[in-house]
Picture 1 (cartoon, helix red, strand yellow):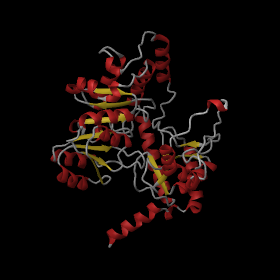
Picture 2 (cartoon, one colour; picture 1 turned 180 degrees about the horizontal axis):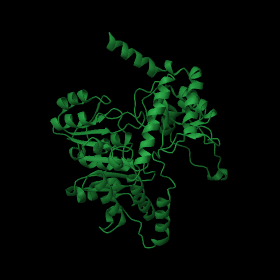
Picture 3 (cartoon, helix red, strand yellow; picture 1 turned 45 degrees about the horizontal axis):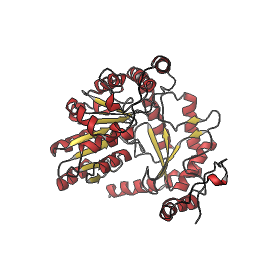
Picture 4 (spheres, helix red, strand yellow; picture 1 turned 120 degrees about the horizontal axis):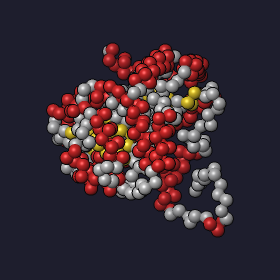
Length: 420
């Protein structure tokens, strides 16, 4: 049986080699991975392109408002590193009320429009920890079919019956609720692979009619949408109708953390019940200080939000005019869905050859044979950079023929069915 080896060779002697893997694990790797490596990826890791060349336009990050390196944030981090010499590394559940982490939690909750919230190690941990404690074996969880994997894993951790409803389809959600009863409805506000905006008002109305709680993951709208960046729930005036709001702080906050809101009455229940909160160490003082400073930068970032939205509208219009089927989204995440993983690798390499860097998303982040190159826009893109992306897109369209991608064919078929 072939074994896929790392390109990084160990310098240890052969006597230090790892023991042979058990047969069951070897068979699983062969079944789930090795043939994919050989036959689809050509012996190269699908997610790794070439290093970005000097002057390349980087559209492969999540710092939507371009806050990385902001002097206020850097100064806050440096000051914490220099001055905080008494911090104890421990689980966040042990932190007392006066700890800076709690001040940040309060500031975040107040900004979003909630009364209390919890700082977590990551957005993944926030989603898992929340779903694990608000659902159980008797609580159905209804998830949009494109909801983030961490939300699905949270339902699994809760041992809850999980039901997928069709993406952005409130009517299908209602049919599912009628069939299985009230529970927890879970959606993203902006979907992380396509940039699609959730029909949040309609989803909330369906959940309310059926006595269900609602969880909204605002990872890709917190900071970019709403008054002072407070998110899509705030923009639509739905904050007080949504039970729980979660977010990764690795997007617009460009940090390493997650956050979720919950009523104050749940605080000590969360601290003694949510496994990621209990069994993870708290963030370090300089991380908390940096996040607190970032909140101030984001709240004052209306100009950056305007630039981001203007760039999004311009590039989406240009790509559509050039024949790219990007109709599945509207926001700052643009999915170029080539279909197969080899096709996505060709697309990625073609763009990189011309100085445009995106990220491949494929299974398990997408459905099988719906691999894509994701372009993530940010507020600091210059006129020259935007123009370069537009020019490259026009240049490579006759080579890549995006109008023949499976998603384009499916969309044409759907339009024809509606017309008939």
